[in-house]
Length: 297
Image (cartoon, one colour):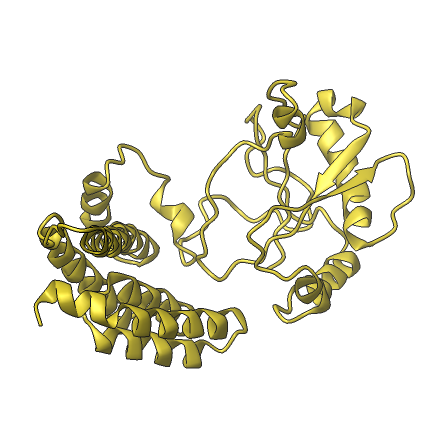
C-alpha cells in the first residue's frame, strides 16, 4: 500500500488506541497510556498525533529526557511526510471517491497540525531545560511568534532573582503599579488545609467536577457574607491585602473563584479575565478590578 492508503487503512485502529490512551491518562495511569500511544505509533509512524501524545505523557511521568525528545522528533518528521502528501490523493469521480479524498485530506491536516504542536512542545522543553540554547527561539519563529516570556519563568530550577520574603507579607516588586507577588499571604494552617483538599489529583473536588472538564465553571462569593468553605476563607484573608495594594478594589462586593490542576511545567495561556456572561448579553467587555492567583505547591 502507498503511504496515503496505509494512513487511511490504519486510521480506525490508531484512533481506538489513542482514545484508550487518553482515557488512561485522564485516570492517572500514565504507564498504561504510554503503552497505548506506543502501540498506536507502531501501527503507522505517519500519525503525528501519536508521537506527540507519547512525548507529552512521557514528560509527565519522567520529565524531559531523551525519550521525550525522540518522540517529538518523530512527530516533526511524520508531519513533514504528511505535508508532502497533502493534495496528492486520487480525486474520485463519484461521491464515494470525493468523500474518501476529503477524509484523507482531513487526516493529513490533523497530522500536520500536530506537527506544529510538536514544534511548540520542543520550544517549551528547551525553555524549561537548564541549557541556554537559541533552539527554542528558532522553533518559535518558525511558528510565527515574535515575543516570548523570560526563560526564568519556564525553568523551575532557575535561581531566585529576589531575596525570599517568606512570611513577610511584602511584595517582591514593591514599585510595580500593576502587579505584585506576596509570600506568606495565608496562615500556614489554612494553606495546609487547602493543599490537603486540592493537592490530590484523585481528591473529591476533582472527581465531583469531572476534572479536567472541557467547559469553564466558576463560583461567586459575596464578600459581605461569612465564608462557607476553605476558598472563601482564603479570599477573606487576601482581600485586605488586595485593598491595600489596589485601593480601587475596595468597592468590590463579590469575588469569582475557580481552581485549576496543572502538572509540573503545565502551561496556562496568558489572558485577561473577563465577564463572559455580560459579553454574551451584548453588555460590553468588563474585567475584574483585580485578578489574583494562589499557588498551592
